[in-house]
Length: 87
Image (spheres, rainbow, N blue to C red):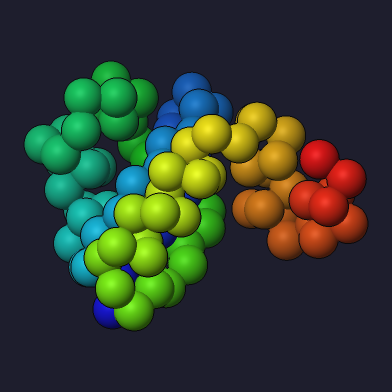
């Protein structure tokens, strides 16, 4: 199982990625050893994750989310389906 995840960094910025082990990836990111952006904005916390059966499906969704506006990402995190449709 693969996961697309959204992290909220200490400065409020959002980081989107994909992994097949969310807990391990989150630990590495918080150690500052996995991604340059998160290493500069520690600590990070998981605010959203979606499971996918294949890495290809996961990567497609990751690319889609990275193109979204901040407002649309925040609506997704909040689970606000009405706002998602509007945005």
